[in-house]
Length: 266
Image 1 (spheres, rainbow, N blue to C red):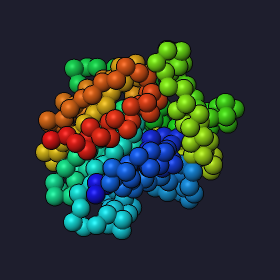
Image 2: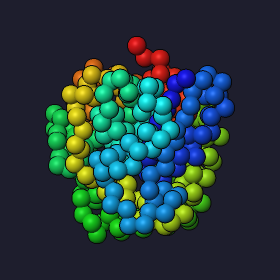
Image 3: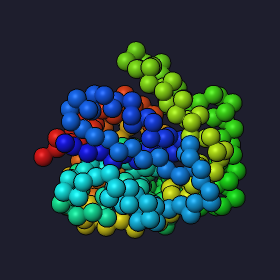
Image 4: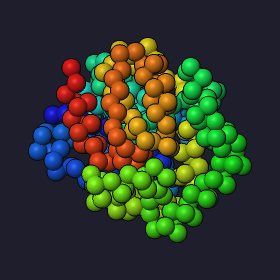
């Protein structure tokens, strides 16, 4: 039996990761999909950052659902990639030796540049997530636009990739359903996500470098730019980068392939 612990990104819930559950089950794969507080669940003033969430919640969940003798694969998408990196570095190789970071954000505050590109490419993102008032305003802006558009917010590049012949259109309605599910409690879940994105990383980079880490990066991603994944690749020794020809939300079209590559990586 192979076990996945999956962590969704901003405006996603664990529901998305269950869409392929039948196929996973046929291959003896069990999915433990975890929804972050505020994303379709009651946030209740949750003090939210990756480190405390891992220590106070995720490790307890894993102890409850994963047999102590079993290894598991940690998977994180976008903002969930930051949480996944912290979760992975909290375990030794006998429990977790493989990690998949899909279009992940990288550390923003304090700014830790790589060849001057990381700070330059993410300066606006850093400015928004570093300021409490701006985080609240931007959270409300995203929330109202999700409601107004009845689901997914598409970036400029995501609008472009939707016009290409190879685009798999059936995935985006599923994302729209999940976006609407995630804002059930208003904008606070989005603000929690910004708290995670803006918080300093406290991962054990050396321990992550001992694991089989795959980083998936979209060449047209204008949300978590490829420079973010390049930065993480440099920080995580022996990590592997898989590039796909798409924008941020296009990861859904290759997500299952990435799961099997991560599980089978030697």
